[in-house]
Amino acid sequence: MTPFRSIEWTGKALRLLDQRSLPHQTLYTELTTYQAVAAAIQDMVVRGAPAIGVTAAFGLVLAARQAETASVADLRAELQSAAKHLRQARPTAVNLAWALNRMLQQADAAITPSADKLRQVIEAAAQQLYAEDIKINRQIGAQAQSLIPDGAKIIHHCNTGALATVDYGTALGAIRMAHEQGKQVHAFLDETRPRLQGASLSAYELQAYGVPHTVIVDSASGYLMRSRSIDLCIVGCDRVAANGDVANKIGTYNLAIVAKAHQVPFYVACPLSAVDLTLASGDQIEIEERSPQEITHIGDRAIVPAGTAVFNPAFDITPAAYVSALITEKGVLLPPFEPKLRRLLDE
Ligand code: MRU
Figure 1 (tube, rainbow, N blue to C red):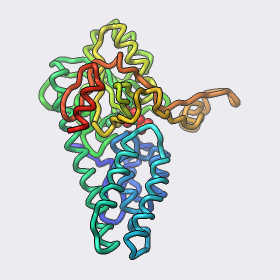
Figure 2 (cartoon, rainbow, N blue to C red):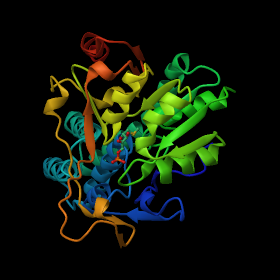
Figure 3 (tube, rainbow, N blue to C red):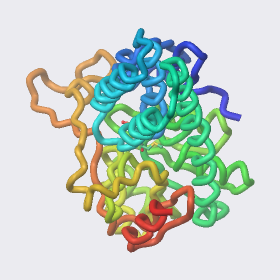
Figure 4 (tube, rainbow, N blue to C red):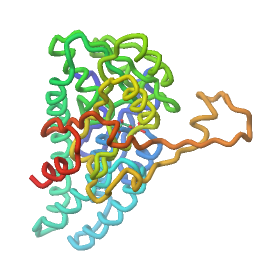
């Protein structure tokens, strides 16, 4: 069992594990407004595409409680405006917009006599997303097992575990499941500059589950692939375009290129909620740029001379040609991805 919960609904408030204080401290914060939820997503109290989708859904539950109206029409309008605010918190992960759209569709479709009934519908819809996320992650983990041999040495980037989701995780969940099934796997965790999600969060998780692991700097993957036989890389995703191009944490593209150069399979754990068929290719995916401070400082200490120019894209695009397979909850997809993604999403 996971010894923590990234997201919890108390019935009145949203309780988040503040991921910025891990691995040193386990601090929780309780939020009661959708504005505070949007700020928590933006500031990365909670992060990881599936986790921010579900968090935003509960943001709408809070918005429904904040709106002191007895009118169903007014409440629907308040939800639209709160969703607009939440959607802007982080632009790259499509799960955020996907979860909000699903919530709004359910709010619009509900035939409700009162605003209070609509509040209940909204809360039930968020609870459903919460439960579904856990189920989907386990399905992805199970689908991935055919690609993870016993004894596998695996490189993983960023954090895609229970912290990045409601529970269990996608790519890290697949590694965890392999270990739980008795496979002797070893995970090499990219530290993931600049925010170090691999070093601080993935290592924290794998230590808790007893999965053998080693933290490496991001630039060590080439050396590692040449000098030790790495069997596969597995990463998560924030958005996958119709052609299979993958937006994920900055550094993913570098890893994919190095993997291809060494004929190491490069797998992407991909919940179908991350697929955006409205975008033909990854070139159309908006890439979030974050504060230069994430690069110029480690903790409170400046490591870059004051005044130096800094570029801090939080994500990059890995072209589909570098992806060996997309691991979805409904099956493992091999290239070409587009017809298979369209078929799965049509079902
Ligand atoms: O900036 P973050 O920490 O939210 O980025 C997280 C990632 O890039 C993950 O790989 C992705 O969201 C998938 S999490 C299952």
